[in-house]
Length: 587
Image (cartoon, rainbow, N blue to C red):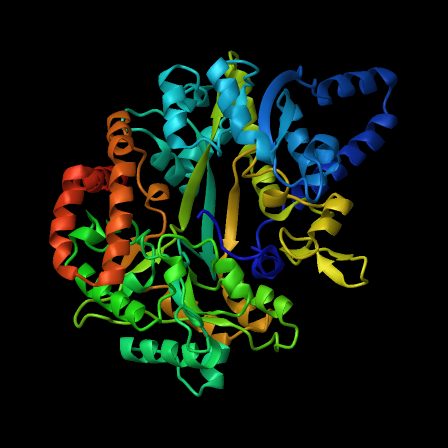
């Protein structure tokens, strides 16, 4: 992920509010104290007034320019270059920075030009600012820049902190977990990551997962129950193909690319996700190619293919999945649990459909091999991704530390998640409640982070978090309210209660692999990175070709030879690297 795969239309209603302590109390106290002081000093002699004023007024720190480069990613709603300074959330961040002597000087580059701009500037070492959003480069490129002295070790900056940032990365559970993941084996911390924390009814560290989804409205129309066995699932696809696909192979059936090894059907067979991954219960790195039940998985998928129940257009390519789903041609596919990506598109394409009934339900894990508990691919509940770096253009480490202190102070972390008090929310009985705004259509909407009123929020200058600056200009620190997303799927969106039940029933499944193993493990060493890059593309290309061949011809007798060939190409090296990174993370 890198994130939840829901359209903004639906995602908005799936993001909830985390009740928390308000900073408003501190603000109110400060205001009252200031008023009382002013009243008292006005009754004193001018000498006393002068003395008290000189004692109470703190000298503002000298502002120093801190140059930054970020992606103007949301120009569809607003231009960061033209209007960022008008947004309440950005004003709050700037005020925190200026209180510490930091004057942010930000250059915004249009999204479609950002990657090329980064590559060109770093290659020429020209126009490099002090702080860069490198999310379009990736870990390997950042490590290479660090090895060349272009990217700084943040551990050299943190000692200059006033304690705020140092405390965040040491005593905040999520900050400390993120730091442990991005710290190299040699002890350097070269980047700040996005941090994404799942919360379910007060329980932190509860993540969502990847599953097989199926058209529940089609099941109901055909008088079928939710599949609980492979035979029932196969029968559902056969029925869909006849009723909705006209019997044509690949229509109304299962649509997903098996070649990437991210197909959630494989999880039913206890097969890990991707080219290599971790079985967290055993603490073991492995590859599907090294698992005995991979043969059973290939046998089953081949049986679907030969019956016309596996969309052959998807083998090696999923680019048509969105279009086919919108055209009401997909009976089942792999998705995030709770995902509502395609339902609105299906209804939009065919207004005659009942929007309250069109729904992909999430299939509870099916035990495909007797005695083998299905795996579920879990999104790491403290998930990290992407890189934001300090460059060697920052020569004043105290300035960098001041930026970190401002960014990771409690007031700003609140701002990332909830916006600004009085603008986005009010505090009622100690809990944050979203403010209501009225859209152009006369309908009221919450001033929260995501919903269909994105343009209206931009126009009102109340956008914040993911749709303003975090993730594209600065690092994100987001609470994902999994409980609200779960219950809203049923109570607010009006889609099947089954999606809510599925997520609730799989919270403690326990037999996990990772959705994105890279965001789960400790950072690779330079040697591991070099070896991984040396072999990965060759192994991945060969693996995809072998899977495509096996799905179509079903010659499972070839799996052992293919596995040995992939191991010799470097698959065993990849597994060993993941095992070492896992061991360091656990250690």
